Image (cartoon, rainbow, N blue to C red; front, side):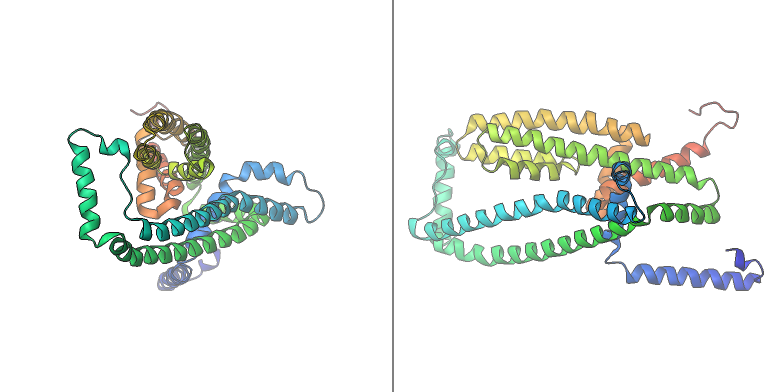
Length: 357
């Protein structure tokens, strides 16, 4: 901005418009890569303290390069290994489902669970409605024929989305590597640019946003991993098939506020439909207790304590972020609210040094 001191007012306006146009054009051109870039920044901020210790293990002129390369590989393994394991289980289940598909076409419609048919007043009605459904649809062959196009279309869409997400993840890891390599220079450049554009007062806002991202990673990711691990043990003790996979899926759902309750409820309902009433009730009760403590006590305490966000704003940041930005919003939402709350506190602060109401 220093080289614009000798420009006239009209030239400065024209220069600002040109910069804004070029910046907008650049954002539009990179719009499909912005999620990957944002994920790389979030991962770099979230793992900065761990990376400091990892970098200290290396010596020599190329220590930053080797540290960044090896640490990026470790992050990639942590992120990709569960996806590969889940894909292998999904393929195995798809093969089993295909065998069941062929068998059901010859063996007739499946029967309702015995305990469901014994429910007073409703059991007989459900059994009759179940039989009428297959009779009106033309038997098992008719039901399978109507479901087949939807199933194939859903599978195709799922495959396309999986490839797209994997490509985003790979590009995020590549970007993360270069962020690690130049992280000190990037931090200094961003700090200088912000001071020139917005003045010294922007530094506390950025500090609050960075602290909120780190706290959100601890409060969302680490708590979700703990929830998935504990519930995976509960699933295993309750006789749920593939408890490791279902525990990992529950942990993934746990990153979204209250979504883990849906996953746990579906698993409990599936157990009950198979006749394992006691196991289903155990999963429902244990899951409710674990998720209540994690979502209402542990997670808000971690995020709110480090980011100085009250419980209500933590929930609003998580839910509003997911609604607006998808999964990435889990980290951007609390960071945005932390910055806005810092602006509010600064604007209402007592200039005499006392605390405002």
